[in-house]
Amino acid sequence: MKSFFKKLSFFIVLVITILLVRTFLIQLYIVNGNSMLPTLKTGSLLLTSKYQFSQRIPITNEEFTYGSPGVSRLDMILFEGEEGDILIKRVIGLPGDYYNFADGRILIDSIPLDEKYKLQESKTLLLPQPLAADSIFFPMQKEGRIPPDYYLLLGDNREHSYDSRNMGLVPVSRLRGKVLYILKN
Image 1: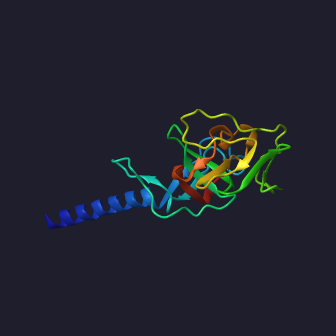
Image 2: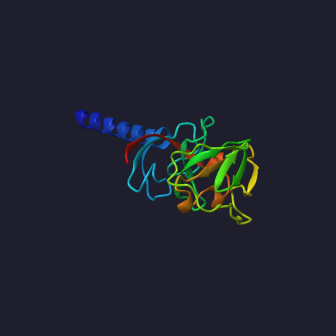
Image 3: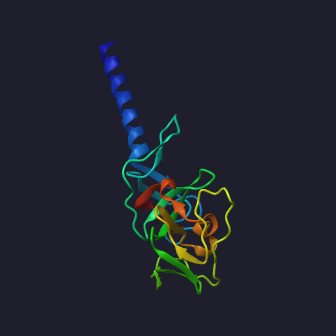
């Protein structure tokens, strides 16, 4: 009987540890969609870091944030959309950056980004769309300054990506993780 309780307690500790690691530190993520082509495609398997990103605590569904996320330009970021779905896009603009959509390109602080990862050059100028009045995302214009705690996130496959141009600038509170490694593409 003592052996049974020892094994049971080991199993319970193991399950709790796995849940804590998955909730707050790292997670595998499978891509669904082609908005990040050619970098990622449907079925790509990613190892993501959730450390220092806002997370929902299981069961209570309350948000928990510890620290501030280390986000850099061109990182691939997981974030929660308005419908609660997890999306993945590339960080193009950081808080304080001045963005401008011009000639089918995005300029950051008046400098065109060198975007070798993109699927193709856009043939049309894809401008930001108007947002609903009650949106939690920050509305974008053709050009503007990114406010504190917001990020400009775009898909690599610009012509077929639902991103900041459609939903607005993403608040730091909606960022859920950063891609560390592409395990399978």
